Image (cartoon, rainbow, N blue to C red; front, side):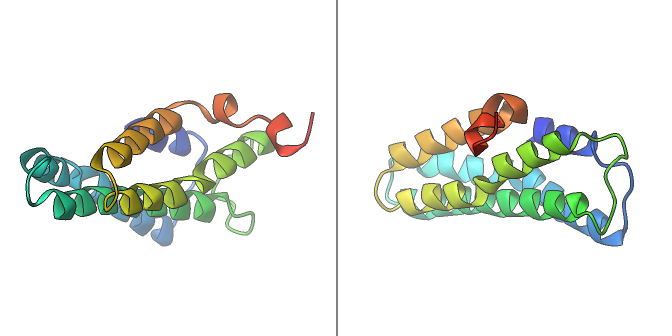
Length: 146
């Protein structure tokens, strides 16, 4: 999460009040992560596993939603919050990579009812996916361009 946050703000040159609020909400989700993680660690494999998984995965849905909202707000051409020298290809790559987040974290949440192992495995895979630089994950070829 910190890698992604840092990566985003290397592209963002200016801010406004809305961006600051979106960033605050994103960081709220990030700093809350230890609590649902501890709850899950205590209840994993027990009778209260499902509510713990729901809390844990809901936290990541929240974070993914605000990562997307913050990025899309900053990258909006009408707001012009990105640095002037930002490569438009990089902006498109980040936007495409982030588009998967909320949907896939919702899948993790849905898997909570079916399989704790599958839910956590997908969550781990997503953490690895989002830690990779966008140019590694999403190429121009994957979008039909060469």
